[in-house]
Length: 325
Image: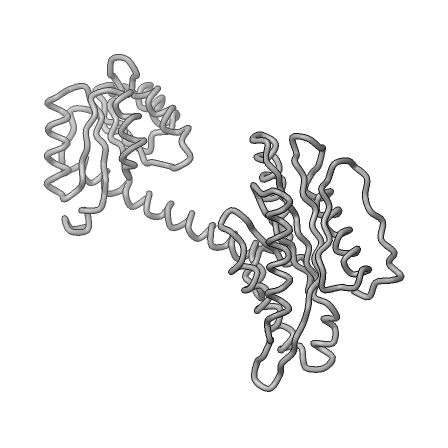
């Protein structure tokens, strides 16, 4: 059984238009060490949910104005799940079924035994703990699936969905989105002249350089091999150019050294920037046009940046014979 000390961080909202019932439940819960807030109506409960974020709601069914059933429906529309226990004088089977089918996690009939009510509160809080642990585990699993182990950047499995979301947001607010493609120049010699472990070290260091130089609103992925993709949000073309040049210079200035192996490398960068409210573009087409600019940077000598302000569906066609990626 949990102790009062363990309960001190638990937040419970009690909603009832009956002052005596409200007082009794509040006193019992506070005696057990819980943090307790009260509301005497459904609308007051919704306001409290926004500001206080309780772990559990004890909710009366019969209230004037916004009743318990309608309050619970609004509660279930929220993204964050909150456990809800109906405490009601409506005790026939049909009322209990209706309450549970609406989304209540449990149903206690008035008049209630205080010790039984407290036991049901503990039960619901245990279930919420299990649900929270499951959500955290799922989030961790999703992170493991979405993140490239070597570089700590996203992998391409999740990137297109994130990019499409940013394009939709940019269209809504009249902003621009930039996709930047970067490829390490002559990376093959890293493995040829050293070993694959050193090649992995270099890629991990490049991933760290990218992570350290993007803003919180931006995100990056390992596109494959020694090729990387960066998405810059809410940015103008001059800002994108400045970022790309800074990243290129940072790579060029880095001396990659690990144990007995070391090497200096450069990178080629191409980016495409578009305003989705002005030109029709989706995630894959914007990535494709950024990749075309990367090809252009390779053709024009490597260790440089090429860019495109997307204004139409026209695309640059590279000459693959000139490339040795």
